[in-house]
Image 1 (cartoon, helix red, strand yellow):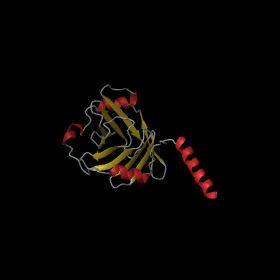
Image 2 (cartoon, rainbow, N blue to C red):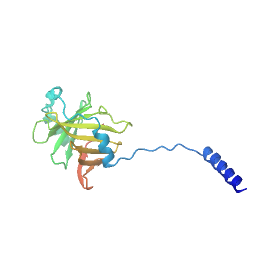
Image 3 (spheres, rainbow, N blue to C red):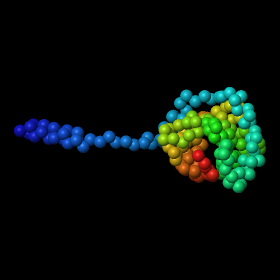
Length: 186
């Protein structure tokens, strides 16, 4: 008799769970370590910089620096200033080729580094995607991974965490605020 009750309860349980079954959807949560693994998969340690020779200096430097002060917006490019970072720099991204962002120190007209956005400079709903940072000689210096529209991780070429960005604020491995992005336009 007990065996029949257990079997009946089992079949009742199966029929109830089948009726109420739902597909649960959720986003992947990244830790510093899981993001690091995804960020470095298949990354080139060096690139040829001959395609970027014309960006070794900012040809629009005076206009770009003035725009940072005045808030002027350009039709052909986006200019951003990064404060609180070890090197005060501004970034220039051209709308006709948003895959690339060029960084120049505020006080020297020499390309410091280049970001290559594997998502072609478009913020989309497809995450994660990476940005690869190379110095002016083409040597990998950092890898960033966007895990959502609001969260990204930046690592040194050796895999050590540089910063974890949430929104416009960057934090170091200890959780201390180390940077802020101003004047973002997409």
